[in-house]
Image (cartoon, rainbow, N blue to C red; front, side):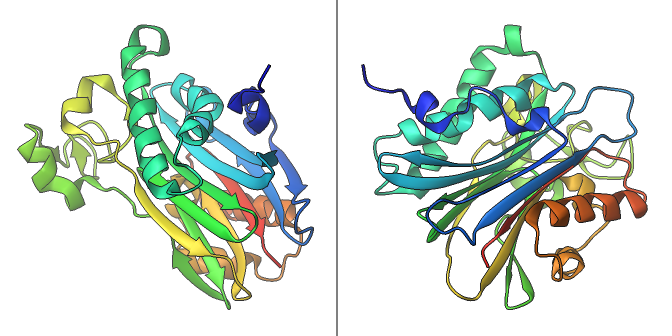
Length: 280
């Protein structure tokens, strides 16, 4: 019986059941990863979820990394941990056109979440995903405000785009929605959600998008490390500050822990999740 993609990828349980962890590539042993999560001060369950692992799939090695930041519920980010990469790799053109496959898989996954809203609830989740193909090609996608940043020769380069309501106001209004700073002090879709793109959020979906921003990066000698993190980090640190903060830390897990601890020290009250992938 042919092994399913889910069995191949090993996504039955997410890495987010632990507060921290680490691993490394078998193909290029200098490439390592580490992750760390810190629960915020809100009176609800942890809503950040992480995937961080290397897996062999069809004679290729894939590094699978993701941050899912839920809102109103932890159920949808948990669902994304188990299903999004599975859906991406089930796309028949993944190996030839990974960017197109990822966009289609994001759409299919969001549609499934909406169809299962009775079971999964009314909440939603942002996402940033990174797939490292054979240690050479990095494909990053995101919806929302979790972010991916690569360090090249000491300089921070964003690989994702924060989908802020003000930046997509025209599109939201064309769908029949509105952007308002009330209640609160940040722009929100229909006065409720502080991002313009997300998975789920069935009550707002007419005015939201789940189309990801996708970028492809070649991993060469200039690439030092990659940071994926939820907005609990980025609310209190700039891209370059985050990169500078861990330049001297060789261990990827220790680097992820340092970033999370620095965010707490800077008074971030949100859930914080960080994945660091070291290329050198």
